[in-house]
Length: 170
Image (cartoon, rainbow, N blue to C red; front, side, top):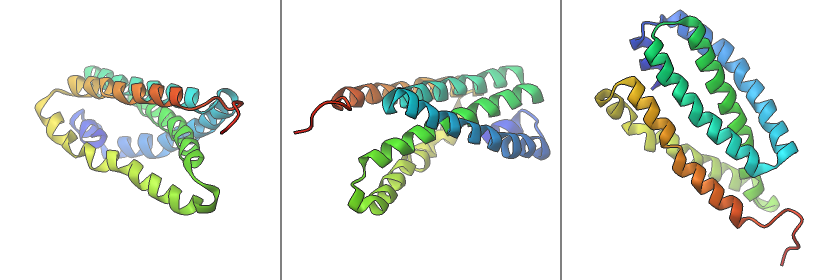
């Protein structure tokens, strides 16, 4: 929903492209590096939690952008934060999916898991346009931040189900 949002706020195609495609890409790479460092330093589930909370928080930046309106500097902050946290969360999530794979079938299992990962982004998000059409942007992006809570609670539950790394395996 970002591009229709940007257009409705009056950003030009050049403004959108220069910030989202150029600066946003650099922010994504930075997030990937930091996400990998978080996994290495603090472990998988803490890195996933940090990424998830930060990604939800960046949706509130979109709500603030809707309130502020056409402001290039704030758009740069919004896109930078969103792409940075997206890269951070993606790095941790790829590490999580990799850990689920059996070494003998890594390629197939990883391909299936990443395809399943895309279901939420493609199928479940299809109602986003309908919802955004019936709400104002501030309410829409605030709601998307709140909708991250069930996923974060699921992450907490998964973290508690996993034995500690140093525990002996049966």
